[in-house]
Length: 79
Image (cartoon, rainbow, N blue to C red):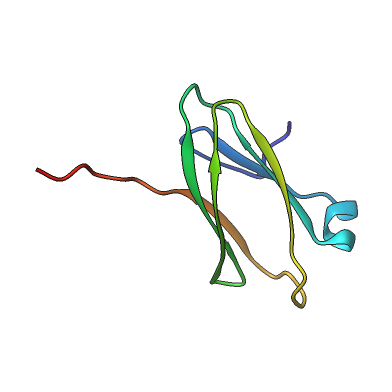
């Protein structure tokens, strides 16, 4: 998969066909499970959990997509 952005082995792919259908493919390329935050147009859209090497396609039913950000959520264990 040709990634649009890579952050700690999380990548997402957007192609013209995905934009027309408002689909975003997110893949976890790491050997660990990841909790990811997906923001569209600077607003939280979805939080997804990806197991190792998993891939998920999410659909956006809102307006025009101007900005997409996918980031890993770090969970710190308490004392």
